[in-house]
Image (cartoon, rainbow over the protein chains, first blue to last red):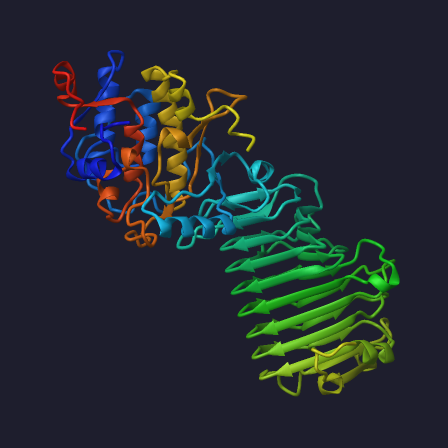
Length: 404
Length: 136
């Protein structure tokens, strides 16, 4: 320890006045290192190395320290790029429960406020995910492009960018994996950007299986490249039920499905999985926002879509896939501004009776006009639009709090 | 914690196995590199000390910085940061500006890093010869 002192206050006093001129101890300390230590310990921050990177270089190479007196803006390093060749990711673990406990302790005493946490560097997102413990937060460097080469997550994690900095951009990795990121435990995204390349050979950028995703302040976009003829890639997919909540998010999607609802496992008929998607204060530009797909083999699915203060422009908000059972669909729209060129809901089936049985809507304060507030039932997939049944959504009005 | 198995620098000091200055220099360089990453993400550690510097059991060259418990973002309101604890941190390694409860930037952590090296106060050697216990 640098200064002698029995009590914290005494040492604080000593350090506070900067009275002590500390000298590196020990005969083996080289003149170069002694000078560097003295600079680190300079009373005035302006006399210290200008930032941690400069200190790392000086310590690591034994190179002569940079000029003594250089003034820099008080907030160092904000937005600075990662040091070349060094770690680019951090796991920052401050579990909320422990944080609260730590605060209680701090309030009860003058002792230093400590909570358990770790910082560790990692070379890739996969490595960071591998090293993270359940409940950890992984902070990604602002503005960086980060690859997701088929990462599978089996623990609760938060991936976040740093507020005030450009969002980190997450893209598919170079591997042949059809899914770039698969989560089986609750996942949170904060202040991130996702970029999906429809022609890149990845079927799904982010798949959430039987768990939840919560995204805040994120942007989901596609590159301009055209998709292959037979595949419509999904940016996000909810597989076998689960929940997705988006708050203050933005979707700018070209040739892809923003949110796919997929069934990949067989469930007993009584246990059809429930998929819930909530969008609050979000905006979306896409051809079709939700797309149910490949329910084949699984029983009828249950979907609940809640859109609150939501702005959308595109062809349809929801599209049901052909040749699959009509799902139980509850739609709630509150305070939204939705502009659709075709229809709000689009069922690709000739079973109008089934749609009437399965669909329930609750529309409050919505600016949806009478011209587009309808569901379309395609009577025969091979026939032109004239064969569609157009049903005003008012016919499906229901109180969604009630049981089915 | 798979990366804490090599023990902390404090453990080594407690065992009387203080690293040689040049080894300590390598450790400090690794810590500074980690701090560079933290600072670039807008996070100040604020409690750099030997107990928060961990060795990797598998790779002695690897060093972890742990306990970001009192870390905070640059530009965040500093003082008082927690009720009843106007100054957070470990006093012996705390920078003068942190001890005064002033707004901090990453250079505060650099002071603490410097304080990890064994030091003596100017005049301590003389007082030692006189049998005193320093400024105490």
